[in-house]
Image (cartoon, rainbow, N blue to C red; front, top):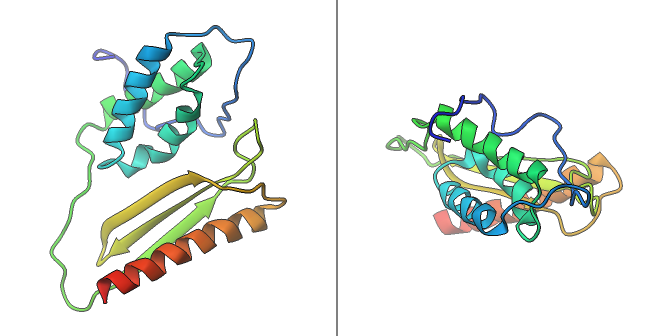
Amino acid sequence: MVDCNPSKYPMEAKLQLGKDAEGIVCNPTKYRRVIGCLRYLTHTRPDILYAVGMVSPYMEQPTTLHQQAVKHILRYIKGTMSYGIQYKRGQGAEELVGFTDSDLAGDIDDRKSTGGMVFYLNGNLITWQSQKQRTVALSSCEAEFMAATAALCQALWLRSLLS
């Protein structure tokens, strides 16, 4: 992948991965190794967290469809090698700001939604998360509410940590 063409996005828009029972199975050991490296990279690259989370559940029997999605992530990393987190010295009072979002039934196998959140302290990114929700949401409003509840728990913990 050293000489690959870079990509502007970590994954294609509206991409939904499934178990792909009819697909050709690729080498699971190599797939797991690449996913492990990508998971490690998410500690400093929150921009790939959602895409890595989408390809991770298929480590047991990855197919060429899953492998193509992983290659797309690697192409994105190739084009964004200089990206990373920068921290600036805080000025004045501490300001904690958070954002949250979710999709509705993003996993086509079990119809569960994926929620995510990010928190900034004085404009510096301090925590981020993207995780499949535990229960199936019946509406987009319910999926958003579950993501907001998880973000509120994180915000309360961060506020107590700061005090």
